[in-house]
Image (tube, rainbow, N blue to C red; front, side):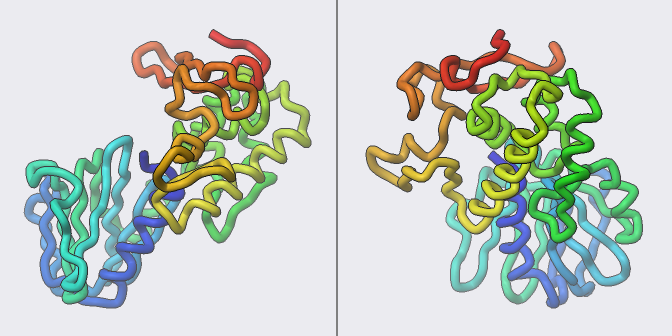
Length: 273
């Protein structure tokens, strides 16, 4: 599932094949960009911003995409050809090619072309980026506490508070903080909230260079320890790694678009659905 670490990893892969090289072919398969052709322009860089991807091109243009829940960019090179891509061809939304390789975007719920000087207006609502060079922990804490009655899991997922956390990390961070996801964020003592924010940055940083995301220390890529990669996310009904109590789920968020929270009812005391 794409979260801030996945986006950072993806941006690095895109940067390797695009940055500093002329685009030899571009193909945008969304109506508003159907006639756009950037071939001949030099790609300058690929950069992450929270869960957003920015591919900057000479001439002051930026290809802005968001992976949503199921989007992906795949990179192929002459040395490492694509093996089937990330889905069927009808799910392709963008193709950017250079002499060094090809980047293909699948199922992108957001794909647009911005002027580079308009990036701040498009992304200005985002909070401090957990993997950004200008990370600002005090500002993230201030934003989280701006609505003290809000459930912690929802405050963490709100990209206006801090950018980069998705469903996986929201569940894992609530577990590591030893509180229910439905605990009002203002009920956490300041030092515990500060520790939680620091843990968020540390977890994303530790996972940004690999695809086998883990939040525990006992994870393995394969074999019997694979289940130990995460504390609670996706582990409904399976025993908690700490106490053995079956992991449970509950819903949160607006009724028309609820999300699922994973938690251990014993290790995470507080309000539960």
